[in-house]
Length: 111
Image (tube, rainbow, N blue to C red; front, side):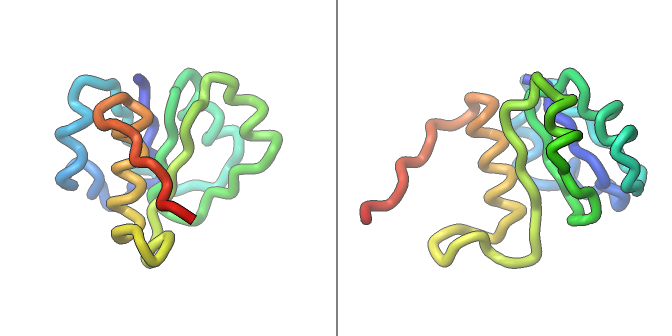
């Protein structure tokens, strides 16, 4: 799996505990900060997964339509995604690992 990490201007993703779990996959980390849609498309083209490390890049329909290989989009955040989940950066890393086949999917909680 080819994974693009964009907007990691502090270059912190490599230091996470989840990063080594993706070693069998091609992880491309972009540390530049930008909002230009053409740069997003250029950096993510051909990737199966995208991890947004900042909330500065809006993913519009026009961007998504130009990325036909994209199968998974994940984003970090400062707060948990749900009351049952760990903090969002962990959830984002878990989502990427799941999409890469590194872990078995977690079934949804019962209703």
